[in-house]
Image (cartoon, rainbow, N blue to C red; front, side, top):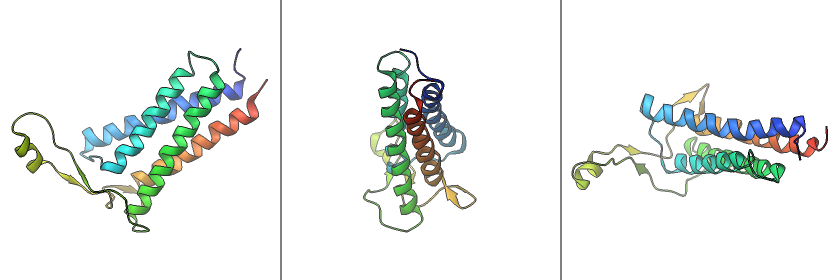
Amino acid sequence: MSLSSRDRLAQRIAVTVPALLLIGAYISQYGFGLYPCEMCWWQRYAHFAALGIALVSLVLAPRRLWVAGAGLAIIVAGLIGGFHAGVEYGWWEGITACANTASGGGSALENIMNAPLIRCDVAPWDLWGISLAGWNFLISTSSGILALWLLARGGKG
């Protein structure tokens, strides 16, 4: 069963959005030293799930169901980002401790002691007053909703 043009667009969104956001996250981390906190990782996990589900939609039926699952996972990533942004902006308290980025090699204690402490309640960077978690909320929720809307309007055609 072939997908309608709207279904194919929803599928492209479901593959592209989490892939680009994950690429951006890793560029931010390794290119600019913006290491993730624990809640950042939660957002990444949801995007990894969305990307995996979306890639399955390329090869297994029922494709529309897989795309819908990916769209829901993208929305979950966005909602986690929205919660994280609220913690960063001081609207509410987070439910997590801070994370660090201990790396391998050498003494474990030395790695832990020298690892930077990454706070979940401080935005390390923002654009126009919107943190990375805030941008994730805006991009992910809107694109996930768009993918689901396209699927709902897709059908034949």
